[in-house]
Length: 75
Image (tube, rainbow, N blue to C red):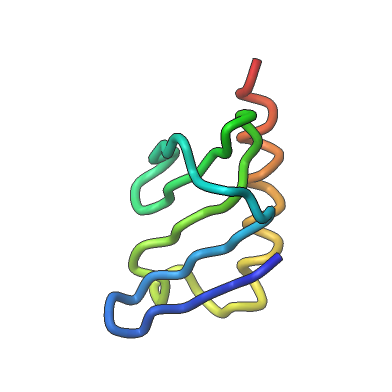
């Protein structure tokens, strides 16, 4: 897992898997974008307005829950 923060835009990108490219993105809730690789696997999340989402330490629990929710919604 790799986490990058862009302070100029207050966005966080959480990369779960290295893939050649993102082939599809879906905004699963306001300000949360899930990126999928060529095989449909979740490869990362983009969080907009990151500072309003709370401390970094709380994000890991939130990301785990989001991964489970996204996985359950896939066929």
